[in-house]
Image (cartoon, rainbow, N blue to C red; front, top):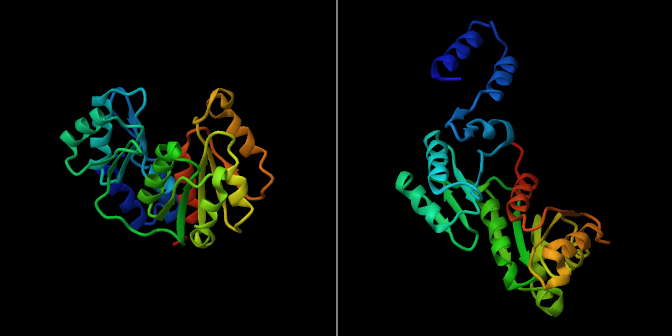
Length: 250
């Protein structure tokens, strides 16, 4: 739907040929922009509350840059995950205000951050090796308009480290807990709080961790109530879910 069609739709509402609800339904199904190699969904934010996110793995640098350019040109915020430094260079050539979060492997364009959350999202990692996935979750939650705090390297091998952050843990509205190896940390945190806990298994671990499968199964079998589990290395998924849970209803 182009600008002319939008104007026609507004005229139909003014003339009462369409109800506001009918017009809203049409707007929600407005089409995409065809780039040949990608169909950019400019109206994801209208339907889902946040613009389309670019998953960069498997795309070329120029494909990522072209999609990013169209998203930014539409006036939307940009989040591109699993991005390489070369992809960032390609994006900045078209979108000079882009920022690269190296640990999170994320490209962000956001002109004006606005606090959309009820409270604070706390991202907890079991080990230092889990930080890339934890940072992806943190950056995603932040871009979605949440206040984010981090507590890293507090795994169950030294439980006193976790307990030293008890105040931050108890004050969070939503907790994202990232762990590899045996994946025990979300169960411990879930047994401490009355808030949603989103568990993220990582592929960190020795051979018998099976690339994160051991942590995934442990988290799915958590004995702590209220623990929800996303996919292996799914930092983005956890950050997005936390943003939806923590979002103010306006």
